[in-house]
Length: 474
Image (cartoon, rainbow, N blue to C red):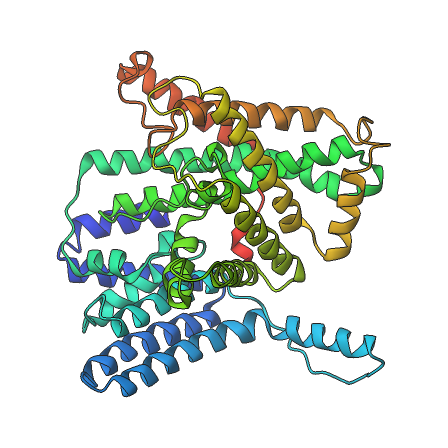
């Protein structure tokens, strides 16, 4: 509660020069991150330093492409190596041990008792973006170490994104920022909406989802289907809520972060969904994996291969579990199949210029949403076996219409989901829901203040059941 106001006041009223502001951001970010566990500051410092130095070395070896390639590769290997050790070492060792045991071979494999550093997957990709962009000559290497370290560790988006490419965020760190009252106010509104999504929508849904997953034997197929619906809103409100908080907070400091979600549940095909869901992650994999593999300008077989590689890697990025690999396989296959039947690319939002979608748009949105939420079940499953059990019960015709497992909390969560999606539909053309300029009902300051007070009261009421942000585990 005190951290942000103190940093904000120091930023604009004490450290007025942008290089001093960058130093404040860096110190504040390291305090923010180190408060959780100061030992992991070493990792983010190593990642930042190696990427910064790699940029200078690539510049130093200008004209010697092989040397530049070696420097860039070394930085990639180092940072991915750190990520692999902390996030995937035990996973691969245990998977190999299980495979060998199935073959009748028993070995004593070493494992490490380590804690996964919060945000390591996010800041690692952000650091790699810089090294690769410098090598590709998309950005000039910077000699301003403070600005660069601030770019990697910028505290609003440090632990759960959005993942910012070097070509977008680093130039903002290098240039002077000016305070814009209207932008700052809009940022505070966006933060309020983010907290509302997290504490009211996501955490209400989480209580129901955790209850159902706690005993699948008691739940009917209908209950499991509705649980999948509720979880789809939980993860969306949870993650997009954090993104709104991060983006809104950055606006207070004169910095613009990339929009990470654009009403994804109004997508009319799967291709559009992946242009609206976790936008910065998919942009990173598209630019640094999909395009280098050949993108879509190749044979159909190669395009399918490239797509599957991207989704399997993005699945693994989410976590060290075979369910995430299956998650990537599922969405990759769905996208490939959908691309064959629907090649239309949408540049506008559903129902653009109209109050309601057309019948065709509504049908397309429904089919897309149903294909998406099954992947959410894979994501939520602790392991492959529980996913298989969930699927078996979900698709069992004998028990589908039973009310086993249905509770008042389920009904309450569904009502919140309906209210949430209706509000999003009304505001679908805006950056966030609380951009309410132009509405007659909120034309007076008193009406707007009443809305904000009402939301604060709801947030305060629901704050007793706070759940950890889902993406903190990645």
